[in-house]
Length: 448
Image (cartoon, rainbow, N blue to C red):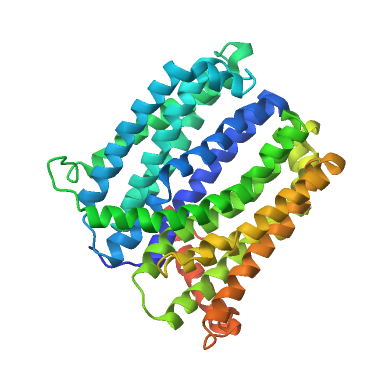
């Protein structure tokens, strides 16, 4: 297995994420503009259901793969075969449930979507689970370039297709056809991704039951942690829909999309960070890495927040329309949540690298229960603004709980070890300068 170069991996995945953000932004703007708040709310609601269901089916197993490949020296073939078999069984269950209990699920969603769309949603759920397992296998094998390319392509090609094809879709079914197109593009690239693992595919190879059992043991810990975090981030959309309307969901998710764009920097770094930290046994070295990562992400947060605070109202009104202007206020109320989400997710990754300890499962419970209570108190009176306030309080609380646990458990380590030092700023400046010099060399002109 190749040597892990954290700076190179972060650079590759960051470039991919920036391109993905651009493609996702163009796509979200286009759909928000032409679907309107209510239909966009219905469209986004399907992806919210996917994020809740696929994680439950996966049980966090994908998160254990980098740890198993780096720390336990598991074989790629074993892990990939189980992921593939799980996908095939999952597809069988989706089709079985659709034909046997399709009417039940159709009524469960209050007949807001046509019945065939439930089949597309089921296919998307099991495909997304397989895609994430394959992606984390790539990370665990240090195939960061391939991981970065495949993370970008589905979003990019959906953007290229939805804009010219949207006008050809029946006017009353554009939510359904847009979702079906998204699923079709995603499944296509899922198949393309398997070409990278053609050498690992051999169902005749013996499966290491101990490693598979360990993947589920560690995965369940990661699942409980990640699922609670996901509920912490997404359950407010379900509550907002129940107590409000699809239109409020559509407006609020625009504010959340801006937060998610900022949070993508954390997700990008966190994915490659888990691989690096899983290979380290030096606590001081790990905290040193975290200190620099915290600084980089905090700078990104501040720049993005200032940009949105200054230009956001004009930006939303011009590109999305006056129907979305409340998203600007919601974003401002979510500023504390941005730091809680990004820094909290990074520190949660740091804790996962210690073998997925119990605190990673317990830390989100209190903030989640508090957020549910705050939503039910605030949403009826303040609508989506109440949801924003609840999010800011609870995400920061989650981060504080994890910090407190770690430094109480490791009294020899001090919180000051996470405070930025002068050399950190100098290193970031030098790294940025080297990146600009590389860029000037590549594009062939001088940047004054």
